[in-house]
Structure formats: C-alpha cells, structure tokens
Image (tube, rainbow, N blue to C red; front, side):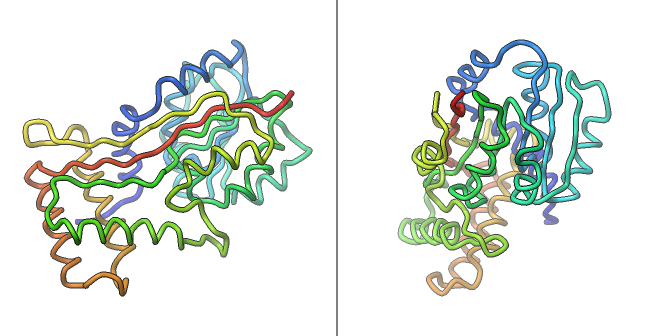
Length: 279
C-alpha cells in the first residue's frame, strides 16, 4: 500500500469529528465574544480546525495558520481558495522561529494548537505562544495524546502489550530538531505545564479516537486511517531490540488483515484543553 500523509490527515477528520470534547468546545463558544477575532493556529496540518471553527465559533477577522511543512500550506490554500467567513493568512515557518519573530509585533485573540503540542517541547514553547496572545486572550488545544493505545480483538496477549509499551516508549524518546517532544503522557502533563507557563485552564476533557467497523466495513476513509496508523507502528518499531522482528512482522500482517476483513478496533486516549491568559 502507498502511504500518503495528506490522505491520513483527511481520513482522520471523521474520527476526530466524533472525538472532540463537546464540553470543552462549548466552553470555547461561550467565552468568545461575537465579532471579528484574530486567530492563530500553529501546526495546522491539513486545515481541519479552520473548517470546524470558521463560521461557527469564529466569524470575521483574520485566521493565521502556521505550519513548517510547505505541502500543508499548499493543501490549505487549495482547500480554502475563497468564501471563508474569515481572512485566511497561511505562513510556512518553524513555530519556534515564528513565535520569536512575532513577539512584541503582533497579538491574537485566540490560539489554536490541534494535535500538535504532544509533538513539540511544550514547556519551552507555551510561554512563547502565550506571549502572542492579547491580555485576556484564549487558547484551545484539542487532541493531545495521553498514554493509552488499544487494539482489539487481542491476537497475542503478551506480545500485544509489549508492542504498545515499546510504541509508547518511542514517543518518550522522540526528538525533533534536537528538542524533546511531549511524549506518551503529553495530555496530562499539559494540565500542569499550562499554569506554569502563565495560562489558566477553563475546561478540559477526553477526546478519544474510537474507530470500529459497522457491518464489516469502516465509514468514510477510516480503513485507510487504520492502515496508516499501523504504518506508524511499523516505522517506529522496526529494528527495536526489545521486539522479535519476525514476530512483529507477523503481528502487523495479522492486524492489517483485520482491517481488510472489518474486524479491527482502535482506541486512543487524548485530552482537549481550553483556557485563557490573564488580562
């Protein structure tokens, strides 16, 4: 199978439409004043949150998206060529460099980081991002991985547990441009990192991915989403000395077959957080 990250981002939109925490999003909607807002989204990926927020919680004003991948910027411009209820500004830049460049120059009303803060050095980055908010400005951080991945049905109970444990360990060991990233418990750690960086949490709740077959098939493009998730497992775990290589290959083959026969169930635990910086 050919794996395409842009297709993966699009395929997981239906998964996250179900997953996003309604309590947290309702708190966001109650807090935002009507009228034009300046919104900054970092790590915008394929633009899913632009589609979700613009015209509902956010109407009017400017929506600035920042992503380091030129392909994501191109995809966002193609997806939203016109007719948005906000003025869209797309910036291709490293988020650390962008925050340093814009500090003291521009300020935003709302900061969005969707499925992003578990991929960066949050204790270092959060104070820089909060400095870009106006006094009293808000932040919305949905989908932060938090320590649980489950695949059902079980096929090899001891080895299933080993695979998940090593997969999570790769998150804890991960570095990006020499910096640590959020690790396998990034979601819960945000609950202490945000106050330490000067933010106040207003609402938090689970946003778990739950993907399951209906009548032996998956909705939308969620079968591809599952295949791509297994590709993450394969790329992360191949060559790990803790796992027997032949046993891992057989495990991946059986899991892929479960997708093709409409049997595999995936559960991933994540957290959404909404809050503000002091006025």
